[in-house]
Length: 120
Image (cartoon, rainbow, N blue to C red; front, side, top):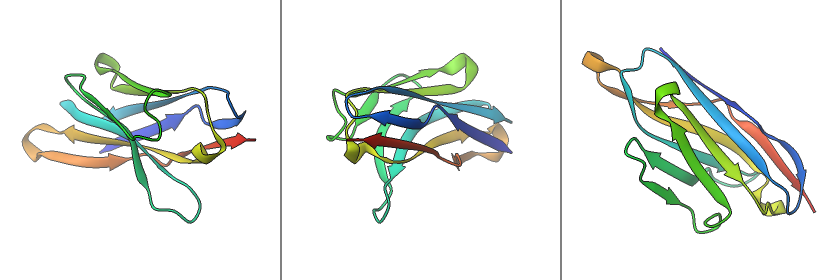
């Protein structure tokens, strides 16, 4: 089994910064790609940022230039630096990973989520 554990959420004022981390553990041959998604109350879950094992990144238009995704492949860890935060960034942020488990194939995993609240 594979576990994804997020950390780093919290309450911050508009214009502030936070750093989210996601640590993957378990039976992992390699991680193909990782991503952060978020879900605000009453809204659908949306992709925030994604990164492949080779380091290619993709960002939602609403966060481009403000958020930065990165990984430490040796530690199976992913980070998301959030800057210039806005109240509309308030949501539960979820870590996602597509994991190569070797002979059993690739599987998708999600973390439990971490709350980010931005006050105006």
